[in-house]
Image (tube, rainbow over all chains, first blue to last red; front, side):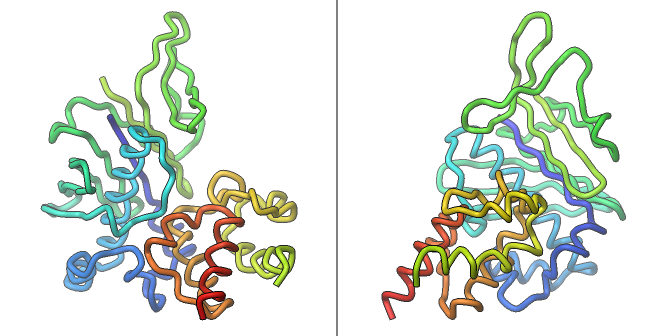
Length: 175
Length: 84
């Protein structure tokens, strides 16, 4: 299983006021809020943790097909921040989702996988929608809206996760 | 309040976040915030906060989890208002 999420930081700054009263409390646990407030650039950590939760949610949705908005049930743990990257784990009632993130001045991207091995997936990030395609494959969604990459010739389908935000598109699939 | 009154009151709340303005004009109980209105998932929390303010109710996390359509939002607000 796989999930990925991209946040255009300029777009996020325009569209969301994370300092709005009640905003952080509805999305983040107390520990997560403390981690945000202690950060050098709190906005980056807001969007890092959000993209971790979103990528884990997409992975969970692929598994059970249930749509829900329950960010507090996706708990970010073990966040290891390095310059430009982060690793972590998002825990739900039933599963662990291992995350690896890229943090740039322009975007935050997170890939979530079942195992702590980001080498088993390919990620393309682009600033144009057209480039977010994989030659030889088409994207098909099932009846629950879960996307798959279908090979044009063989018809084989492999799991894929697609994310758009602002100027960016990201596509991630298992090798 | 009638269903249509709720829908009329929700429309301006959803307007700043809806990327599909045509779907916003055709708003019904079945309209999905993400699939139809193309609201960014990070803005769902703004919708919840705006609905809390506009209807003077508190939406707990359990209710928020289901608040993905116009109909679900109306049902949640009505239940909170009835409980007062």
